[in-house]
Length: 319
Image (tube, rainbow, N blue to C red; front, side, top):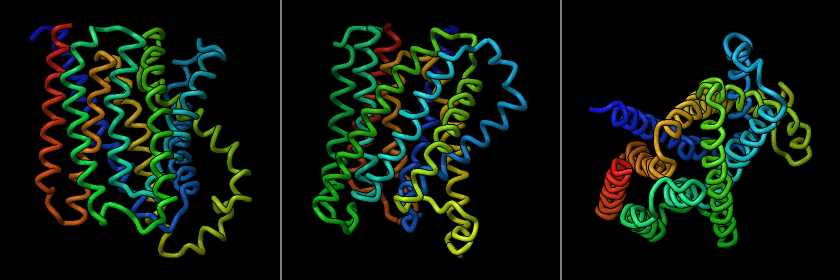
């Protein structure tokens, strides 16, 4: 195996691994339905930001001494789009249209990132993307239509709320598509920053945004800001804290680190296609939690998606 093939293999492993973690993004909010989207967003990114701040002060501070204000502004912009904004709209969608449907809409990210990434940075002809993109799209369509045909896939909400949920999910997709491509370009032009250091800088910037937003949430009924209100949550407090710690440390910090490494090792369009393992993992998680095996249509859709990924990897090898 050549060094280039070895690098791509590790990049693929990182890309798959991060999507196994990211799938928790859709499961945990559904299990914490008694908390608002604002509370979940702030809780997740407070934990992400505080952990990042500790890592920054202990380990990464000396690695960013040469970074100017433009680098920190970029970290702040990526924190606003790829973290806080993306997840806020995602949680809104989960609560309006359900975790499974939101995950499947979000599952179009492999297509949007692959096409937008290859358009911004032409790594190989678009003709090589036709087969993998079509297979991935068909797989997502089959799973999505099956999910929408069953009442169990949708929460008990009005038609208007479901439409809003779909729009919120679309907004999340747009934000993260731009962030993924822009972040990849930034890392490739700032090679002095390691994936771990950049993940930490984005985390510190996220903490800054969350602190700024906290006063705005009191009037909207969003986040309980005082200890007494938190303690009154009773038995719901521990699951909330544990859920936010998992989302903040494992999914956010660890996920950002793995994504940075995957995008650094792979063509943007191939790394984007690997995002499709997220909805597949969600299907597995939902099946385990609900103790129900995936249906024939879900398995068929997943098979088409995986086949599309295989064609995408083959196209990348020829580049």
